Image (cartoon, rainbow, N blue to C red; front, side, top):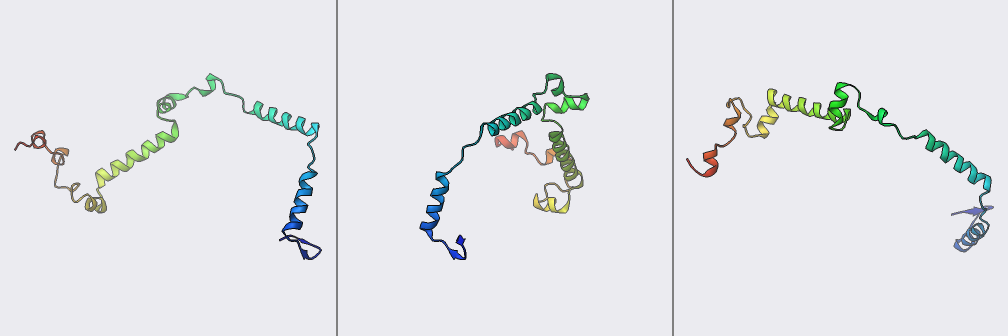
Length: 124
């Protein structure tokens, strides 16, 4: 609550102060508008649109990775590949227990995990 000379103001006194402040709203000067527009023009000039030569991918890998989203996407793709290779080669005990033993060392090829075509058709 606002106070004036140690005495708190009630809602009606505050409303009268706010209405008086709204009635005396100053208009911005023309010089202020000119400074704002000059600042806006300076910001637009600083953010000039790059030319086609500036946006061209550079180097062999720059061209290759431009199609998938640039270097950030390539780093994510590499991290996923390394993680998949690690899980596939190392097969930690946690992954093996979560997969109910499907990734254990008992199988030798991916065919051991997949049903045969005859099995999918219901034939023996």
